[in-house]
Length: 620
Image (tube, rainbow, N blue to C red; front, side):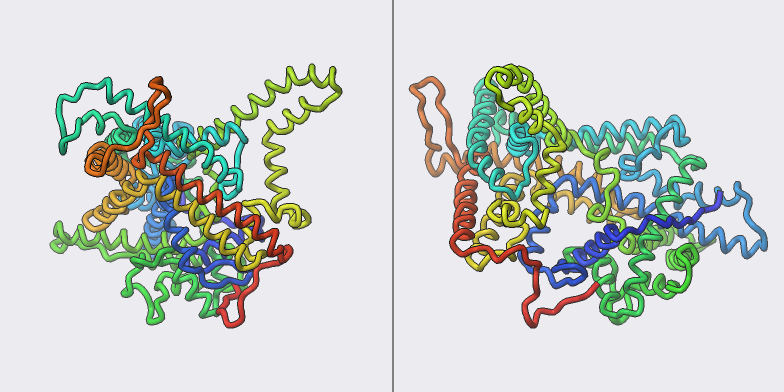
């Protein structure tokens, strides 16, 4: 069945359009001021983005979106070849001929059988979609790998996970920028830190050290949370390998073809909506081109030999050239399909020229071209724009924290409401009704809506989350304190508490770069993350189990607070929970000072963000 490009009249809404523009601006180093006005992001904001990128949700989201985008690039490339063959034969290809040329070609099959696509493509590797029994099995094995990924994340940061579960079980769900969250960090993290220290300490004391490493017993390394995450990373890597050994190339079923065509059509239509906005506007074309190069702009995704003299990628120029605002969406989308298909072509070595080295270079050139398409379409098809499969792709840790804990919270309050009803009858109170209200998602949604309701701005002005999101409404001292408090929170949560994630990130990026350099296909974010977790967890276990104890021995043993000999508790700076408790103290203090300063300095009112005179802006 030939590729079907369709347009939907209700796909592009004003909300979606603004989200796409915001994503393009964000990736190009801009931030929204108000409405359609943008300015350059500060170095502080860029640093915050970089720090928060270590979260596992980013890895899963990138793997999901990139894997389907690489498949779309391969389909466009092969479809263009099929259309050229149609012209050469002067007739339409039969369904069998087209399927062999496009859907069942090695180029498309290689992208559909990548581990990232197998794991995160919704409903593609199911019997209902027409997958072969072997591929259904490969999909199930990969889903096991996703489950192991969740277990790995649980053990990678047990202190943070325990805190999030306790917080969400107690309060349902809390904005991380709120004063409540900062207060709970101060109140809970110390106890969690002591608890994890004592749990591991008890297990280590019971384990006999049959071997030592750097003068320290190996039990202190082997019985540690990071080693469990490292082990799960290893098992996750092996699961991915097993899935790749099982998956096979198969004839793409009509149901699978329909799903792939629909996704491609939506991306072309979304891309078209933004190309219309920037056509014949050099400044906005530059913004789009810079967005394609990547958010951090450390290493450009598209090299200079694939850009024009102004640095605009050739693929963007090619697709802009065929867009005609006077034509219908479907006409423009078909023209874009032709332009993109043509751009993605790479001359294939034939005959005596098809040496092993030539085939290797050809495969790398194809991947490079396809990566340009991914860079282009990721400006509009991104988890920051729309993430319809986010709930289905939650790992075990995120589900436990974000779904499981609030459900326990609701169940506890609703169960307490039953005996409270008896008190209401006797004392003529409304305790039961209040508990039921607090124990509902509807109530939490209403509270979140109140925070963004402009009519309630004056009532929200001293709330921590409102202040963090609207710092421009406060005077200089208050603004400074707000930013310091938020900076300390980000450092606590994304650097100290995420020490395992940050170490793993180094090995993850090294694995991805090695794949890109030596391999012929796109690097797998799934496999890179598993390998990163394996090495990062192992290194952190060694640091916690040997390096830090050696340093502690050299500087004196950590102090012990005695409870009359019944339960000695070690308060050590080597414990993440204790360290987080100590760091959360000034965070909460600065937040309190910010709220005090807001009351003294005053509130400017519910004003929109403005740009200082002389600050360059862009209207998009």
